[in-house]
Length: 211
Image 1: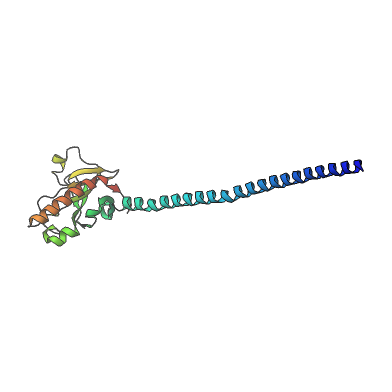
Image 2: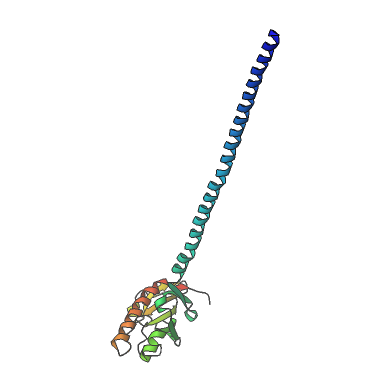
């Protein structure tokens, strides 16, 4: 009887230890599952936030590009004179340039020359004397003359074909500035002077074009 009681008591202690081990294992597994689950839940939030931030930055960059392009291309206009085989880049403030082709003439040197008188539609509307048919076209006269510009233009041409702007292979382009003020009012004359100065600067951009 004494042995039987001792065995029963020992069996109970082992059983208690097994129960404790099982509880510890279950607790450990539970903690690992909870930790992994908590980690996987928080990760997508960070990824989503990063993606939205990147998309927002990309959109701002794309929007700013057209504004720069628009500003750059809106400041000047190509003004072509096919009869003289040239084009000029003029500021938009005088983009309404108009011209009249004059009859061909022959210089004392025997060179053929063609000319155009120039104004703007704005000046023409202000005063008919400022038109290309007026007595003093406000933007002067451009000449296209065959051959080379003479070494002594004052002697050889007597200013008949203007001051040299650009020498091309088979012809040269020259310009005579306005010989008098156009218009009768002070405001018109001031406008004409301002436009003439802008056009004089623009003449430095002359390029040859193919007719």
